[in-house]
Length: 377
Ligand SMILES: Nc1ncnc2c1ncn2[C@@H]1O[C@H](COP(=O)(O)OP(=O)(O)OP(=O)(O)O)[C@@H](O)[C@H]1O
Ligand SMILES: [Mg+2]
Image (tube, rainbow, N blue to C red; front, side, top):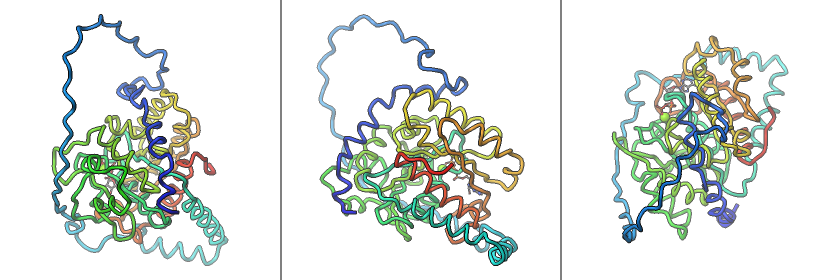
């Protein structure tokens, strides 16, 4: 696909999807009353009498272009003792290979892998933006963003961006094995302009060793901020250059996160595999339903994630899926994986087989939904 194919009416598209995003976004502050219909919201304040004519306002002063600062980030791998763990134990790897030798599961696995690869390689007409967020901190957002981004980068020819929208000492660079960051999402909001080519833009990004690009949010310092306007500006501008952008968003109900959730073409709500995790994600889905935006729930995948080995044994996953499957929402699971649990840079070759299948299946499903289609449920 040529660079020009990305130009299209991208700005119009993005601006349309961002227009009026603040309408109804406050509802998530009242998660105790999910699903409250719009006509039962508190009545608006009575009109205030007109104020005297305001004094003339000075033209806004353009913000200066940012100055780059290169920051070295400590690599968590250096803090970990011993070799990085494989996702599956040796016994599990052996039993899986034996089952493959004797059963018909091998044929089924090949068919499923082919279906997933086709979905991952489907052609795109304009850039798709996929937001990963959660209502609980530590649910697995950053891990899932890194896994999705690397999967798309592996399967696709068009450029793939992993963008961090979490100013609170986000860990996306660390999960991607990046030790030096320079420009941030806020910087790019001020730097990008429509005359820039992809080759100019990538000069401000971190190139990942096995394909794909990273735009970090902070520089490993406490006190960074990401303004909503900067997030919007960066996303509008970047959609033109990247086939897929996966966004690691801060935890809901932060403003950037709510806006990102609404503006994206598809969204992943990462949910810890606990009763509280499921209940709070259901509240987010009810809030989304109350916004009355057609297609928003159908473009949503809830990912129930086990970040400890016992989580899926204590949660009734079938009942949880029923509780979360609202108006076209797809519920999927990510198993506990020893390699992911150990932290540090993710090495896809060390993921357990079940994790690998869950991640590629998730990436295919989310992309299909970002295209406005539904995958098999
Ligand atoms: N499938 C998994 N198996 C095992 N551990 C996991 C899995 N997914 C995530 N984890 C672990 O859970 C912890 C939290 O993950 P992560 O940092 O991705 O969450 P987060 O939602 O981005 O957190 P924060 O809200 O702090 O940004 C990490 O230690 C990670 O290694
Ligand atoms: Mg995170």
